[in-house]
Length: 95
Figure 1 (tube, rainbow, N blue to C red):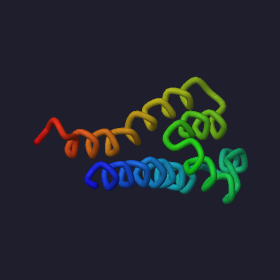
Figure 2 (figure 1 turned 30 degrees about the vertical axis):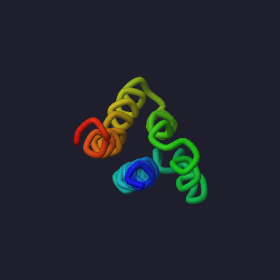
Figure 3 (figure 1 turned 60 degrees about the vertical axis):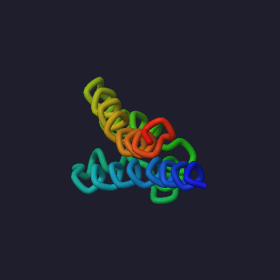
Figure 4 (figure 1 turned 45 degrees about the horizontal axis):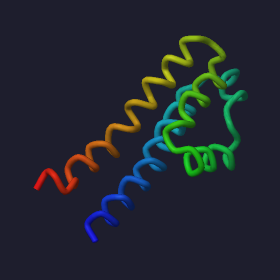
Protein backbone atom coordinates (compact mmCIF):
# COMPACT_ATOMS: atom_id res chain seq x y z
CA UNK A 1 0.00 0.00 0.00
CA UNK A 2 2.91 2.33 0.72
CA UNK A 3 4.15 1.89 -2.84
CA UNK A 4 0.79 3.04 -4.23
CA UNK A 5 0.83 6.14 -2.05
CA UNK A 6 4.43 6.90 -3.04
CA UNK A 7 3.68 6.50 -6.74
CA UNK A 8 0.56 8.67 -6.44
CA UNK A 9 2.53 11.41 -4.72
CA UNK A 10 5.28 11.22 -7.35
CA UNK A 11 2.75 11.48 -10.18
CA UNK A 12 1.13 14.50 -8.52
CA UNK A 13 4.52 16.17 -8.03
CA UNK A 14 5.49 15.47 -11.65
CA UNK A 15 2.43 17.44 -12.76
CA UNK A 16 2.17 20.19 -10.14
CA UNK A 17 5.83 21.22 -9.93
CA UNK A 18 6.28 21.75 -13.71
CA UNK A 19 2.92 23.53 -13.87
CA UNK A 20 4.01 25.86 -11.07
CA UNK A 21 7.38 26.51 -12.78
CA UNK A 22 5.72 27.34 -16.12
CA UNK A 23 3.11 29.61 -14.51
CA UNK A 24 5.73 31.40 -12.41
CA UNK A 25 7.92 31.91 -15.46
CA UNK A 26 5.02 33.22 -17.53
CA UNK A 27 4.25 35.85 -14.86
CA UNK A 28 7.78 37.26 -15.25
CA UNK A 29 7.95 37.34 -19.05
CA UNK A 30 7.69 40.52 -21.07
CA UNK A 31 4.68 40.80 -23.43
CA UNK A 32 6.70 39.82 -26.52
CA UNK A 33 7.88 36.54 -25.00
CA UNK A 34 4.51 35.92 -23.36
CA UNK A 35 2.88 35.87 -26.81
CA UNK A 36 5.05 32.89 -27.73
CA UNK A 37 4.02 30.85 -24.68
CA UNK A 38 1.38 28.17 -24.55
CA UNK A 39 -2.25 29.13 -24.12
CA UNK A 40 -4.02 28.17 -20.88
CA UNK A 41 -5.24 24.79 -22.12
CA UNK A 42 -1.83 23.74 -23.42
CA UNK A 43 -0.15 25.12 -20.31
CA UNK A 44 -2.12 22.63 -18.24
CA UNK A 45 -2.07 19.76 -20.74
CA UNK A 46 1.71 19.71 -21.25
CA UNK A 47 2.64 18.96 -17.62
CA UNK A 48 -0.18 16.42 -17.34
CA UNK A 49 0.92 14.59 -20.49
CA UNK A 50 4.70 14.97 -20.28
CA UNK A 51 5.51 15.99 -16.70
CA UNK A 52 8.87 17.71 -16.24
CA UNK A 53 9.85 16.86 -19.83
CA UNK A 54 7.65 19.76 -20.99
CA UNK A 55 9.93 22.33 -19.33
CA UNK A 56 12.73 22.50 -21.92
CA UNK A 57 10.06 22.98 -24.61
CA UNK A 58 8.42 25.81 -22.68
CA UNK A 59 11.68 27.67 -22.17
CA UNK A 60 12.85 27.19 -25.76
CA UNK A 61 9.44 28.22 -27.12
CA UNK A 62 9.30 31.38 -25.03
CA UNK A 63 12.95 32.44 -25.40
CA UNK A 64 14.02 30.96 -28.74
CA UNK A 65 17.65 30.82 -27.72
CA UNK A 66 20.30 28.40 -26.46
CA UNK A 67 19.96 30.09 -23.06
CA UNK A 68 16.28 29.12 -23.06
CA UNK A 69 17.27 25.51 -23.67
CA UNK A 70 19.74 25.59 -20.77
CA UNK A 71 17.13 27.20 -18.53
CA UNK A 72 14.73 24.44 -19.52
CA UNK A 73 17.23 21.73 -18.64
CA UNK A 74 17.84 23.37 -15.28
CA UNK A 75 14.11 23.58 -14.63
CA UNK A 76 13.76 19.92 -15.65
CA UNK A 77 16.32 18.83 -13.06
CA UNK A 78 14.76 21.10 -10.44
CA UNK A 79 11.28 19.73 -11.14
CA UNK A 80 12.44 16.10 -10.88
CA UNK A 81 14.10 16.59 -7.49
CA UNK A 82 10.94 16.45 -5.31
CA UNK A 83 9.75 13.28 -7.01
CA UNK A 84 13.14 11.62 -6.67
CA UNK A 85 13.39 12.62 -3.01
CA UNK A 86 9.94 11.17 -2.29
CA UNK A 87 10.97 7.96 -4.03
CA UNK A 88 14.17 7.72 -2.02
CA UNK A 89 12.48 8.56 1.27
CA UNK A 90 9.84 5.88 0.91
CA UNK A 91 11.77 3.18 -0.92
CA UNK A 92 11.65 -0.25 0.75
CA UNK A 93 15.44 -0.40 1.08
CA UNK A 94 15.52 2.73 3.25
CA UNK A 95 13.65 1.04 6.13
